[in-house]
Image (tube, rainbow, N blue to C red; front, side):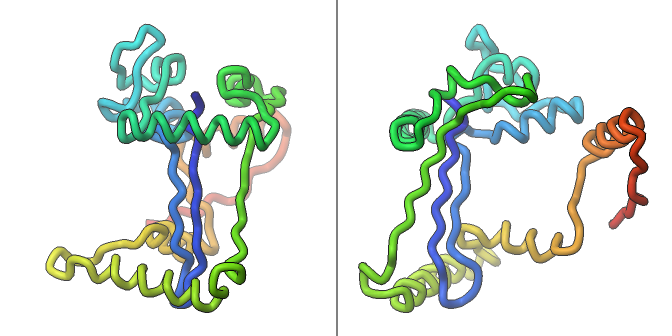
Length: 195
């Protein structure tokens, strides 16, 4: 199986939409690739190697498998998302796709499925947005003694505001871009560091 992400979003009357965007694996594939590039281990319990043994080595994890979140529940969700994306999206099963990380010339032929629901058919857009805003408020106010509680999507919305005028890039990506610019004879923009 792939990491078979699931994204669900509902518009809100108050601010940002209520949004969940998750991989069905315990760790996102891109985070494993980033750990490999940074020469860092991944956390325990995230992956197994090609022989099925637990590993924190990102390369062995990429050669093996990323474990599903929520054990059988995440695994079942990943299987059904793959089935729906392949059947309705017309792509290949993850096992049959050639990974662009290992072969950048590959046409991965992954399947994507997007379902859009017209809220006007279910009581109207304004009513739906008001209910979502109420749900966000209830989640955020759910445990005042513990401090702020985030509704799904709050962290990402905050990151979007903070990074509105910049793109944070890790050191290994900067080095890869510098090497590529030297190979292609393209000058790199001046690096700006923020604390």
